[in-house]
Amino acid sequence: MSKLNQVSCNECGLDNICLPRGLSHEEIESISQIVKAKKTLQRGEFIYHEGDNFRGILAIKSGSAKLVGADQHGNEHILNILLPGELLGFDGLSTDKHSCAAVALETTSFCLLPADSMDNLFQNIPSLTRELFRHSGEKMLEDKNQLILSKRPAEERLAYFLISLSERLKRRGFSASEFKLSLSRQEIGNHLGLALETVSRLLKKFQEDEMIMVQNRFITITDLSALKKLLQVHESDF
Amino acid sequence: MSKLNQVSCNECGLDNICLPRGLSHEEIESISQIVKAKKTLQRGEFIYHEGDNFRGILAIKSGSAKLVGADQHGNEHILNILLPGELLGFDGLSTDKHSCAAVALETTSFCLLPADSMDNLFQNIPSLTRELFRHSGEKMLEDKNQLILSKRPAEERLAYFLISLSERLKRRGFSASEFKLSLSRQEIGNHLGLALETVSRLLKKFQEDEMIMVQNRFITITDLSALKKLLQVHESDF
DNA sequence: CGTATTATTGACTCCATTCAAAGATAGTGG
DNA sequence: CCACTATCTTTGAATGGAGTCAATAATACG
Image 1: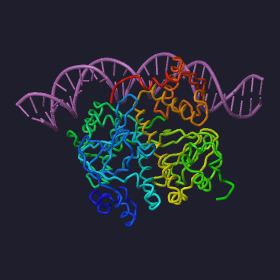
Image 2: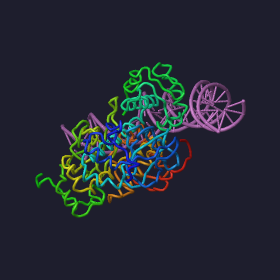
Image 3: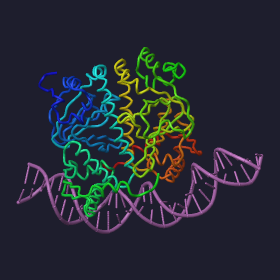
């Protein structure tokens, strides 16, 4: 636990989004002693691989990452996109082995709450435990939404993806209306369960309908409410 | 905390599946003091509604239940099926309000680990905290698998559903090869993102291919390995 | 500047849905 | 015990949304 790779959570701009959200100053002090900064990774580098031993919960400090799981056929599925202040590593909680891989989507730095310190923290900072459960509850909510979304038509899936990305970026102090996708059409399609051609066609359609402007991987949302309407119109099934 | 509605976890046959899994005798004693038995519900009755305040983590003691979430259109989606020994209520962890409903699929009884005792337990029984995280990690794994599955063709989804049900029942001491679905075709379809007609057709097809026998809601798996092959054959996409 | 990767666009195909109608099952009361 | 109704299930035929295949265009990269 050298001084060198420590970070101070109270000096981090993400303190109100990330792990220490909701903790007192003293509590943040305590976890600052334990949270380690990890080195920065480049696009394509692995934060952890599937099968790696669980080493703790990680937090994205800057950049972004994707969680990638493999199915029985060996196909890869992008399960989640992670933005600054978001936690990852929960997939290692149940078996102590990671069940999916985490890969940097761009130059990305992150912090680590080591697994071996967790029992200790549980006893000393119950509010941290609550916070961790809250984060894991949030992950489950996201999964729930994705699951519901996976039954909806392509248009809605892509619209939801853009809206949710926009909102999450906004909460982190980035522009909600203009952003660069760190994913290829292929990757977006994979994540949403669509063919890359479908993603391309829909982005064009959204642009023709004047809801967004697309220039390569740069997206400008020009009519957010129209985009949101796509999620609310239509009646149907069950 | 009256004596009347307490249950003893060490006398429960589910001790090695449910919450106390992995705890010492003394620890199980401690949580037995706190876990409450709740009254039995009939098919269709709600364990909790969407929007209800989070009251704690629940465990199915006998029977089964479904988690039901609503989307923006007001359509309902069956997110999960819960069998004896499985925990539910995690959807209330992040916001203290349940984000989906839990409904009994048959006559069902369950236990409650009250929310207001949790901070206390975190400090006194760190291994329980770990166990809870482990359970919540398992939930996330299941969600992950469902998410991956949602991108696969209808046949695979239904095959996986039957296999996973069979395996889970087996672990709980029920027959792995013969069971009664507590869900209608409609509900199975809803859960898997398929039309009820598709479910009906596929069950027939599986029967014609001599992998299962269907009689109404009674299923007999006659060739498990053939069923499993459906999940492994085919190459393709990403 | 040339090569590799990524994105667009069109034509065709197919899996699963929808619509529709008939058949089976379970539950209820006479 | 049987008739009656409501619900659930099966089956067929037609439609359509998204995938696949294929070829071209644009962009990034060394």
